[in-house]
Amino acid sequence: MFEYALHQLRHDDLLRRAEHERQVRQALRLRRTTRRNAAPHHTEAESHTRRHRFPRAA
Image (cartoon, rainbow, N blue to C red; front, top):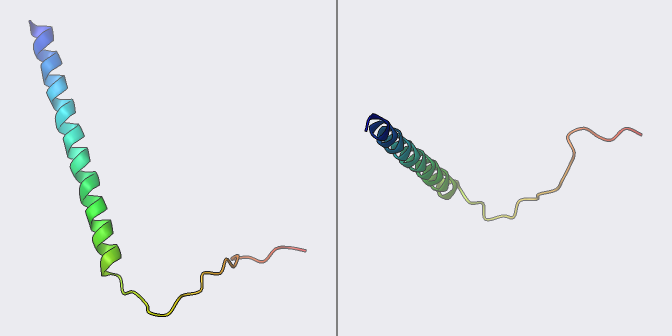
């Protein structure tokens, strides 16, 4: 009986931890989305050239 009670406690703890981690991920996703939507959108197209930080050696 004691082993079953320990198993139940561990099981319940794992479920609580998993739910907490899901909530944390959801909150981070929501903050990221909010931040993206709040960023000012430029009307002009920005150039996205791929310039290397350091030029290649000869």
